Amino acid sequence: ETGVTQSPTHLIKTRGQQVTLRCSSQSGHNTVSWYQQALGQGPQFIFQYYREEENGRGNFPPRFSGLQFPNYSSELNVNALELDDSALYLCASSSPGQGGNTIYFGEGSWLTVV
Amino acid sequence: EDQVTQSPEALRLQEGESSSLNCSYTVSGLRGLFWYRQDPGKGPEFLFTLYSAGEEKEKERLKATLTKKESFLHITAPKPEDSATYLCAVQGGDNFNKFYFGSGTKLNVKP
Image (cartoon, rainbow over the protein chains, first blue to last red):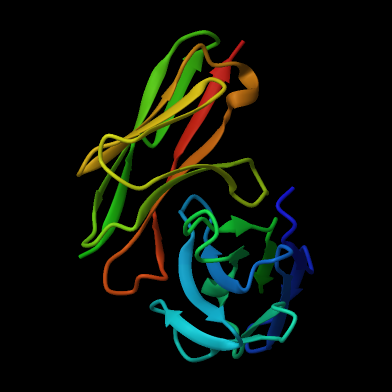
């Protein structure tokens, strides 16, 4: 168990809808990053949040947005859902400077867009 | 372009048959190389972090090594419970907060 918890675990949305995924980071971790993992692929970096600010972003369009709260929990929001957004969304937390840069993942949220 | 390539894509072993998984990478300014294990439907589970060429880490039947261009995950006398997808990731490049993942090696250990 990493202590990173995500919700919901599974959800189904219709194309064009919006979705919010939530993540609670491991105790003591102040940095949260989000990844998208399509079936049979490795995780792809979406963005990272540190002290409530986005401080790194991958090749994802602006309809992917996020928030980090003072307690270091985080949300991933996706607007105007497309069929290709169907994937496992992973949250990972870390605390740079403590034991290096290792990130620890939650179990993920499975999103299906129909 | 920063990238990570893992081979083979899939590997089938008999219980007790040792082998190695490969992770080759091209990234400027490597900050760390990471190995994760992922079971079906689960999030990746952290195994090792390697920071510099020549470094080695061990955990039970697994041993990870690092050179300037690649890393190996050696599995000694595997058991069926070692069956999983093994992911390699590197941190570095222009976006130093980003982890670049390979597509993984799916390991199946038969009893």
